[in-house]
Image (cartoon, rainbow, N blue to C red; front, side, top):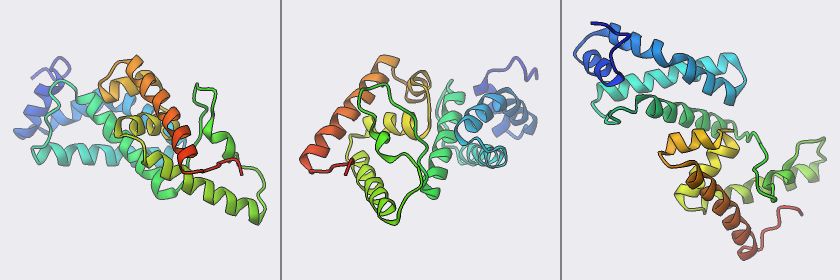
Length: 194
């Protein structure tokens, strides 16, 4: 079999029939892009390697369990798994990397990390809790785009690919997420600037 010429779906099928080399070819084909995605989000090579390995362990388990059905979209599916593992890492560490959204309102301006007094630290902790509550209250599609963009530092092009929508739809969902966060802040009388 010519592994280099075979499509991803064919490699998966042959792998599931017992050909381990097909999996090796599949990994070799996509490892650079998946690793580059992970390292761009984690920026720690050892940790990125761990998440990369965990990504392929999850891929293999899903394939062997017969739960893979992303016909023709293996790379997008694998990138979603990698993204979810990166997000899990940040949730477990309770760290939130920040990036400025393209809207006027930068919700993360309120939580810059300088030398904090005990009182400032308590306020910052409350801001994190309030912000998390606001994000969780968003509709799923808006929350997903916001988390990918803000926490995962994913470009809108990558968000569009991962969520299988157009870039304009991804941008629109981000815009509505920010609008809804503002509305929720008003409704719940949450002031992230106090």
